[in-house]
Length: 261
Image (cartoon, rainbow, N blue to C red; front, side, top):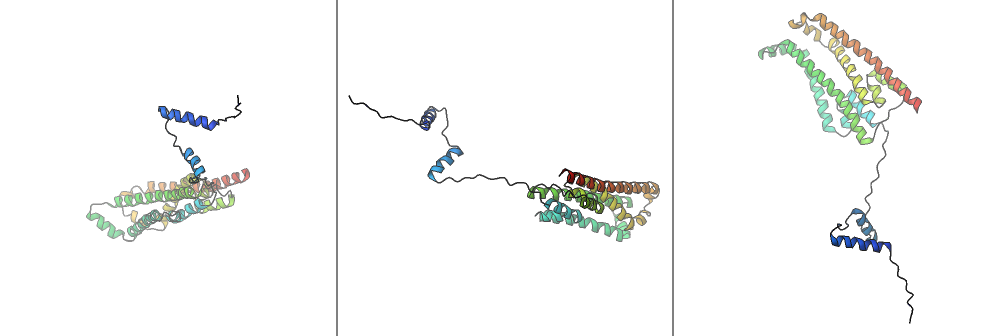
């Protein structure tokens, strides 16, 4: 009787494939249609393409610093630099209109008072309305700086600061909060910037506009002149102290980071 020496080899893939078909037949398993199978089949057929995406490493460029600095000096310029031209134009137009309104009120005060009398608006209400609008623009300017910084970081990656005490200190000496932007601290920069802009606004209002002369004509303010002077002195003192703190903080943080690095 002839001997049969043939050896049959069963691969693991054949066993698994058989089990998978049996489970599919019984309804216990859905037909395999995953992306992994598609890529496997495609590798044999030469039709599938890999769609693997590689994450871009975060950069430490200065785009965030440049964008926020532009908005610091020209409201909306940082947004235009970031490619948000319409937002930048809207911010710039808003600030321009408010400045024009202040100039018009100061230059045409008698005509403004006469027009206000027609509608029953008092002089005090005019001053309060203009002052409220000015402070809203101050908040708008701070928001523009912060938004320009964050948008640039989203586009170009996080900014880690310059780690240069002299540069940071000089920046805060010019404008409080600018040194914090150089250090990569936009939140702290906005806090210092608020006090700085408030002080600058008060000085400009008192020294470069006829605000005080017009205010003396308002009867409601004559009895409050002492309180007004005290309030102005407090605002200027607080702004000066915060300005000095901004310089000190900017140099301290930059110096600490330089030593750490």
